[in-house]
Length: 340
Ligand code: FA5
Image (cartoon, rainbow, N blue to C red; front, side):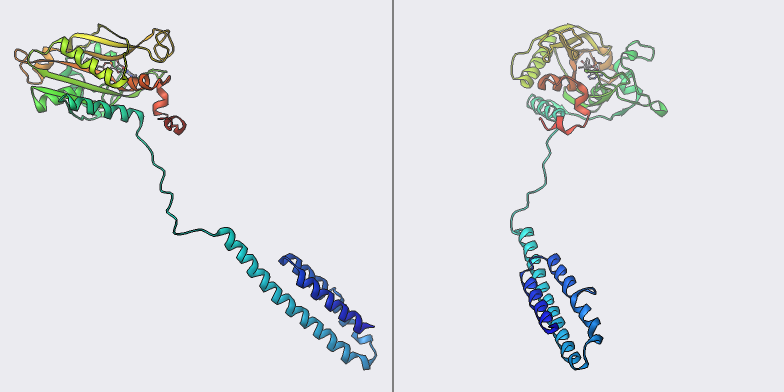
């Protein structure tokens, strides 16, 4: 009777081992058949109750059933292990000979892009591109531009002063002076760059923004030359007619001085926060160079004269791309920058 149930248990368990599809199922068969509370262990404990003539035979039967099951479990486990390895290899297969996707490429900031367009345009008109320091002396930022210490124009440009009397340049005009000193007349130069003003920020004012200075010194330069270059500049940037107006403007380093405004391209002139509801945006102050400025840079105003302008580059970029708030440009938000 016992012989038969051991043999039945063995063949039932071998069938379960053969059909197990996962390591978990296999473990369940092992616990059921060979576990400490399983039928084989139970039978082993009851050996002592058997008549002596049956003990050796039943003992042999139990041992061989246990060995057969252990062997079957072991070889099935190896099969399942390599099966799951194959499945993993299939899932994680990759073709190492495929070309790599390559790093994501960025692109130029819209201000840099327009700046480079202007540099190319002015290079084609014979203008050199000059650079100057962002940390300036009071002399180059103010005095050499005919703005003496007590002059009200110093209040027009709230200044970040640094220790030792230096400052963060409030405009690109100091590069005019450096250009005149270094290169002398005749001179055609532009100077794009970053400038800083200690003022409150709104839709059209930043504390840090970009200007592009321009200067031409030669014999018999007139307002007509100035207007020609301003029109050429605007046509190259906007590729279409834009409405501008010229009005008198005051800057101690030019005489006469003008403000060239552009009709606001955000609202079409009807009024918005960018143009402060006026319909016009100040873009291009300019004028003929004041003889005092020429003289201070060692140029004889009896022989030479010229024009200068100070383009609001950041504002120009706003108009070109219809950006309705200047703060987007330096906010560093990729969702904004990726549109260009
Ligand atoms: C000047 O800075 C003069 N140096 C320009 C100049 C050069 C005049 C040569 C004559 C001859 P102004 O402060 O107006 O001028 O600034 C020039 C332009 O910079 C403005 O028309 C405007 O477009 C831009 N701008 C001024 N302040 C800000 C600001 N806070 N944020 C953004 N753009 C500004």
